[in-house]
Structures are given as structure tokens and as C-alpha cells.
Image (tube, rainbow, N blue to C red):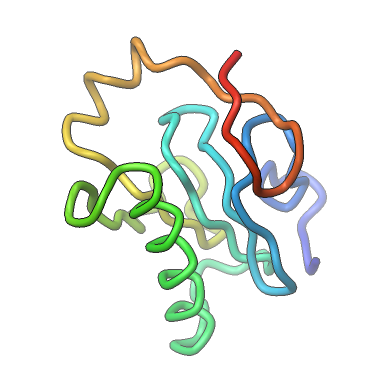
Length: 116
């Protein structure tokens, strides 16, 4: 990973459920939104088109499995961490649901999502 010392996304702490990881990116539940989030393993806000397409494809697989086909939207507006590329898969009404949605916990990469 090419990272920055004070970046939470570069630190990649395994706190919530991790759905996927490869040499380019990882996908885990966002601690704030409680939805799947893909994170590029480079501390940079602008991935090239090939990397972006790969990350979007991997997030699509995870989000379709978790929420269902056409039941979510892709959001790569990097509000809280604008200098490190990441994108969320947001289900319908995610904002109101996040208050009551239990946080997941890390057990392994892939496998069954376990809630706290």
C-alpha cells in the first residue's frame, strides 16, 4: 500500500466486516454509514480509469449481494476524506437506516457478515 501516515483509509484497520481485498483495493463496511465502501490502496483522490472500473465492479458484486440488484446506488463523493479515493454503495434510505443498523465486526476477509 502506498499511504500517508495520518490517513485512516491508508491504515486500513480491520474493525468492521471486510468483504474483499486484492492488490488494488479493499471493501469493508464504512464505520460511519454502515454500508460497503471500496478503498483504493493508493493515497490519491483520482484513480486512473482502469483502477476505477475494477473498484466499481468489485463494489457492485458486494452491494448486489448485500442489498439486491438495483437496490443501491454508487456514491464516490468523498466528503470526510477527500484526499484518498473511496466510494460507498448506498441502499435506499441509508441515511435514516444507519441510526438503527448494527455495526458489523471483523472476523475474516469474505465470509459471512457478523453484526455486533
